[in-house]
Length: 334
Length: 232
Image (cartoon, rainbow over all chains, first blue to last red; front, top):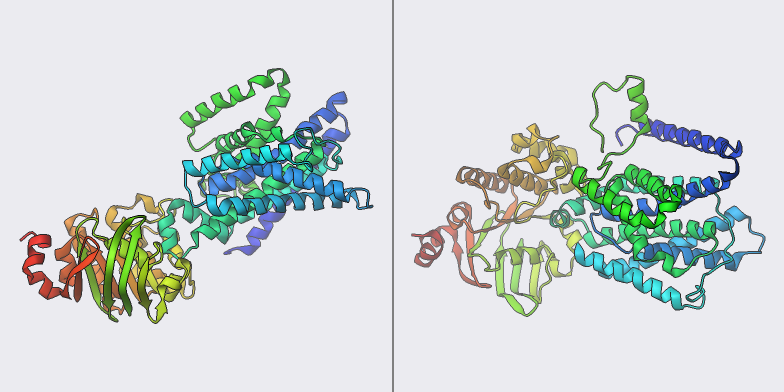
């Protein structure tokens, strides 16, 4: 609030940085540097995009709110199925692909967000381990329910979802989602939620409606998990409810923890790296969970706050430092 | 200013507060003393809506607190300094104070200057993380944060807890000063002697019931109070 001009400049700079990054990707793929494997690598990057959305949204719950959720895959699943059903229903009506994708993603996100509210209201009265148990149960219920609903293809694979998402769109959708989440964390809402995490009795004594803000954050996180799920559905074009099992939730959670709880930068980099890693080493993919556990143990021993802790990347700061304009070394974080 | 009538509160099957009636007049310091587990904190938590009452009335400044949402109570200018201080450890001193003005940020800057004037130690440490303050400083911060809401009345829960005798004295003189500025105080304390020495009136709570009440001076000389709470 103090320096809106500087903030505007910072947003502009970050935007330019993203455009630059995007152009590098475009150049890389269009020039076919990777020859025949271009499509394959593009696929890995797309995977990274939707994983980033899911992991960042989980970080809102784990990092910002300080509550453990082990059922994030449940929200992803709701978003994925709901957006697929929406786009199937609207397909062939002459809606342009991009618009259809956006409608489907928003529908998926809203469905997941609504589920988040419904689960959040009773579940967020619990704290710590108990909340984790409830979220696991929720994700399992969703999985089993989707295995039995006609509309989600029963236990069979739901296929024939229009392939609306490619890397270029996924990239920008990811950018928008992460930006909105970043703004949420930095806003009055985000700070309120952080104060609840720090001491909920003090927060309540300061006149904060604790339940309201917790449910709100949970719903926002679920919304973006749903958007991530929608992107997944429209990229994969086929899915089965068992994709979103407990392992998937655990994977997302470990990416949050490895990246750094409370650091969206950590989530973005952690998700990008960890989601592409198993693809890059396909032959070892069965050992992926094993590798995850080892990495988790190592991170917990050497960097208990995650690799990035609560540090956030700032292009403005970096540029200032490069230009030698940063007089005092700022100690990262917010 | 605050009137509690026939309040009953229970935790599940345990009936914790039995028909308690307390009255706090404008500008008074009233203390509520009693042993561990007597229900002192429960009463304060019920007043600020953090705990639901079974029956009874809680009227603050004409408003029925039992029908007011907990998050709205502070807007009625009733602040609560919770037991065990409960500051936000990973926020700076200044941010902690800002949180105090959460419900009503008008004049927040001027009020903060006032708070800093009253607690120069907090001003020195304004950029320091609150978790790194000493116990006494944290208690000052908790009081300062309550003052940020520009309250008419403050509920204070065990302000002397875990503090050295010297700091206890300091905190109590602060409470007295705050009261002189026209803020009514309901004080819950185990340190009965200290509490009675600064209070106008007092209530003694025993296992959820008020057993003795009266002017603080009288209670200081009451044989039963002396024996049970003052160790004389």
